[in-house]
Length: 213
Ligand code: ADP
Ligand code: NI
Image: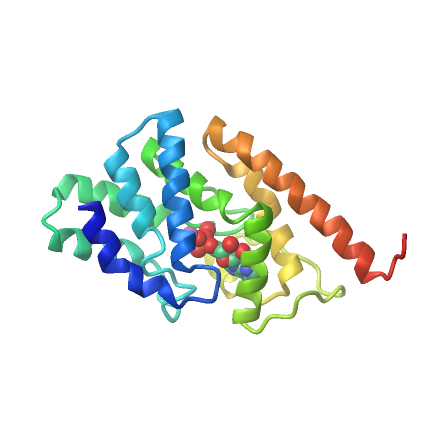
């Protein structure tokens, strides 16, 4: 089941240059399996949800919102997957995304919390920095515009529509993720990755300001 899902979806992510390439899916899958070992939960649901979590994300599907769950349901149905377990996977995919600084996360199941943590860990640290600038370039966003300050988005639509520069994205999402991880095992990893982003930003501003020391 897992192997045939991988074979089916791999090609869809192969040529992505927005930071949502196949290796992102693989890292999230691997991290989710690691977190499951530490925290428990149904491994099959965690594996399927992590592999399918970005299957029709609005950031890559031309702007259709809340489509991932439906696409995942169709794929699992085609594989004759158990309907109850299918809905468990679908509800994880529908809730996994970050929706704005002031929008509360709604993830009920342990399996969902683990997949969300795995996805969020890949959005911070060195990997998070690389992905943010890759995404910014992909969307033709400026790297940094010092006059344009970050916003705290109150709803998903304004967050999703914001077109700010990439440094703002650190303040609007990436630096907030450390405190929005669900499991203790992810928080341990998240702290180190968070510290690395803080170090990066301090150095970025130094070089931006032509500091020579
Ligand atoms: P989520 O579903 O929580 O958005 P994804 O797995 O889809 O998580 O990954 C989102 C990735 O896209 C992050 O790594 C993030 O760096 C990048 N991204 C999203 N919006 C922006 C943005 N406005 N600027 C830079 N990067 C962005
Ligand atoms: Ni993802």
